[in-house]
Image 1: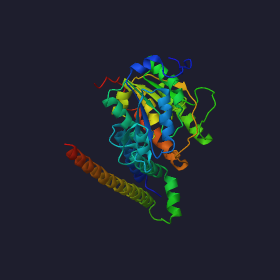
Image 2: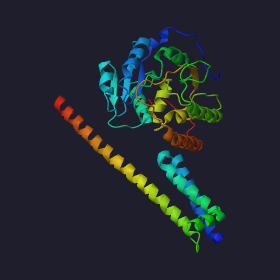
Image 3: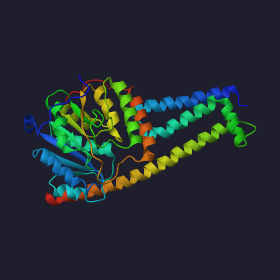
Image 4: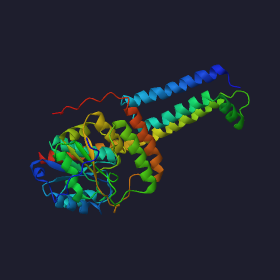
Length: 258
Length: 116
């Protein structure tokens, strides 16, 4: 399998997309400013895409803004963290029998016009999960702060070694996931800072994952959930989880739960 | 000077704690978030038990002349206090969230009855 899948740029949705039940999972914490733009962009990409905003205990008008834009809103009664919020979306997708889910952050850093390239390998049946990577190509765009890039690169090295396939952006939340991936994530998803562990988990369940080069924008509302003080805890927690995860015996292929 | 038997017993006991914590994480009975303090406890006590000269030096710094292993107890107690305090904050958060959940459930039930 190739490391990254690049397909010719498409305008709008690939034809097969319209035949699928498809949903966009948008986790949002206090993103009333950025969210309307995100929803508009998703609609512009694909008018038939169901949009589910997972409001992770916001104290601003996030839920109201999303409803006004016609999105479905899952309001968590209190902040459960990004992992729990995203999993809520995957549970929704699983219980409502969606064929394809895309995960797009509510802060506007993910560019929905690149979704066509992201879903292409999943639609083609090449992979179960496609991840938008900021580092898979030399493209410009926002690539996080210098210190954070070092951490991301270190984690990418470790994860690549474990899964036996080159991954470059283990912290990207810009993803397209098929039915198998939805079923897995609905059942088991890491709670805090989930992306790195989820990547390892995907491989241990023998699902296929590829990266698609994307560019991201600097966040334009709210603030990142990872502050500098927390990054030490982040690294310790994630490395501990990866290390201990290696000793789990769950590397059996997932059967469809239904 | 610390008796050798104390160092060996201390190191074995603390390292066992580390192994037990790792096994609990592996079997999904303990989340990483709540394991980190326990791991720090186990690793620190293991290091202090095994590194005999270090223990003696630290004992001298804090004025323990007669029996350096007393420092092991002191450090162990400090870590247990930290873990307990951490758990108190966790329990406080959980009980707050529990109230919110109960309130949400009551409101939803009321809506259901009105619709029926």
